[in-house]
Length: 186
Ligand SMILES: Nc1ncnc2c1ncn2[C@@H]1O[C@H](COP(=O)(O)OP(=O)(O)O)[C@@H](O)[C@H]1O
Ligand SMILES: [Mg+2]
Image (cartoon, rainbow, N blue to C red; front, side, top):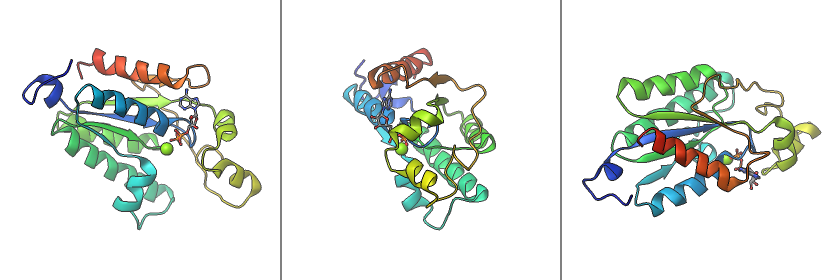
């Protein structure tokens, strides 16, 4: 559906949060999905964890409290945008269940659609992909506090969708998230 300025496809926003370990595939899936949704005529905003952190939360580090604050800020921004008809894709680790629950509640309280997608790539696969070299640096002991290595990642218990990127190619993951949006009327 192409949607017009007044049609439902153009006006109904929502947030898709992609949570998972570093190098799980969150950004890759979000960017591919964003391209597909834009081609359908939607307004899409990707709020990528690393990029948005630098501009929205430059004073925050990686303590538990700071990680929580960072996730809540992204959640607030996502809710604002989604409430104005934007499809927001948030590939953000969001390691703690309480932070993710707060973001979900922020959306619910304002009547804005929200779905959580767990990019459930296991740590061993993430360490092998190691897009930014973080897993190698953690293994070498030059950094500490890597989520999934020596910092906690609380697995989502009931995400709307769980993706296994070991078996599925990128296109299949994108197709499955797109199907979730359709099933949700988004
Ligand atoms: N099915 C898949 N889904 C997503 N990424 C995949 C998949 N298979 C291989 N990859 C690769 O895994 C890496 C994931 O990196 P990235 O998306 O930056 O992770 P994250 O944003 O979760 O840290 C990319 O190099 C991507 O090409
Ligand atoms: Mg990423």
